[in-house]
Length: 222
Image (cartoon, rainbow, N blue to C red):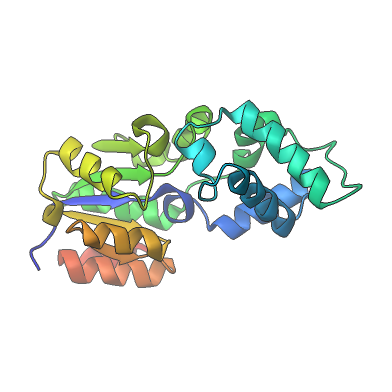
C-alpha cells in the first residue's frame, strides 16, 4: 500500500490520556463511578435510539440538555446517588479539568509534521467542549485540518465523516491514515479506502507508524 501523506489522530484516547483514566479522575471529582456514568450515558442515548454519545457528538442535544437527561438517568439507575459534586449541565468543563495531552503522541504528531507529513485531528466531540479539548491539544501547535463531529453533523464510524475529512484535506482516501483506539472506527475508515493504525499503547503505535511511514526516529520518542 502506498505511503499516506495525511495522518489523522483521534483525540480521545490517543492525543488524550486513556479514557479509563479520565473516567477514574471524574469519579474522584464527583463520586460517580465509571460504571455508573457509562450506564447513564448509554441510557440517555437509548432513549433517543442513538449510539452512545451520539446525541451530543452530532449536536442533537445541547450540553445542558444532555446533562439534564444524564442527571435524571443517573438518579433513576442509582437511587439515592449523591450528584451534588457533579456539574452535569456543564459536563465538559469538569470532565476535562486537569487533563493533559499524551506527551508521546504529541511528540509523534510533531515528528510527522517535521518530516513532511500533513497532520490532522479527526474527533467525535461536542460543541460546548471545544475550548477545553482544544486547549489540551495545544502542544501540537497548528493543526493542518481539524474535523469535529459536532461541526459536521456526523461522527465516526459514519462513512460520511471520512468523506468529509478527505475532501477537507484535499487528498484521496488512500492518502489518509487514521490513528484511533476504537476498532469500529478503523473498520469504517478502511471501508472508505483509508489506512489505519489501532492505538493500544504508545510503544505499539509508534512501531506501527514507523512501519507505515519509514520514519526511524519515531522509535526514539518514548
